[in-house]
Image (tube, rainbow, N blue to C red; front, side, top):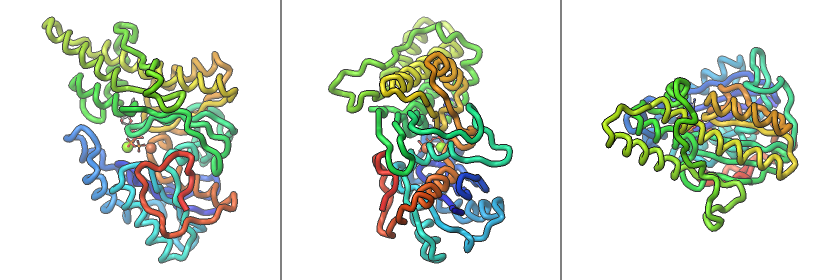
Length: 355
Ligand code: ATP
Ligand code: MG
Ligand code: FE
């Protein structure tokens, strides 16, 4: 099926077009620059930016794919989770298109969309890790971004996704952004920490791994916590500044990055092992981190786990992954959503489609 997908859960306005598993267009506009001076995504600013970017981004996607709106078989849109005001812009646009064109509409889960990104194939499109075209289930999926740190068990993309764990406080990307700020690096901090860390010693400082959550705090077996790590970096920086010595930014960045990568991959591979699932899929903007991908590759190989990372352009938020999940729902014969759904900022991952 020929499906157009709309994504507006955070700061990216994404419109993608797919035909089944084939990627035809992936148009993205980002309001990241507008949030830089606030040091984080401002919901109101993001929502306004989506409204302005929506029509031009739809037009760009159609031009890129060489497709006319009338040819579409269905429209898919992110219903949640995400920023409520931002989601509402995408949901409204998708409903308007569906009504005007009289096309079926599929309201889908953003996190499951990240997994759907791995299905996509196209000319010049190569997974960041793993062979082209292979997508096997069940798989454990680790999704890490500015808003999410979630570990999923995907048995079936359109009917069976289970939450194994998620962050109980900050998301991994949020931790990167906050620590970057402590070190005087610009927002978004992830890429800057990555760059600076390359010159540093990851073993210079032993930051806490935040692995042993008190049992009563963790809701799931593989929950994450990053606020303790961030605080411990802040304390270390404060203590060091008191000595009057220059801050070893590279060593702090490298040691912090190592702690994040270690925690993420220890839990992800423990889940693979415990559940007897020899496959791990990574997704989300934080996967751009070089050390996370490197450590993932090393540990997966040692554990006999097949690692897959979609092309990095499809790891950050985009409309193509939403179109991909929509196409799978259509292909599986799922009924379209009614027009009564809304934006659900806390949509649980088990709910793959909102009807
Ligand atoms: P959502 O959480 O809804 O998916 P988002 O916009 O917060 O949305 P992304 O755009 O996927 O998430 O990712 C942005 C985050 O990824 C930021 O926190 C950024 O610092 C982080 N990031 C980007 N590149 C790197 C990197 N090389 N290393 C670590 N973190 C990175
Ligand atoms: Mg983003
Ligand atoms: Fe995302």
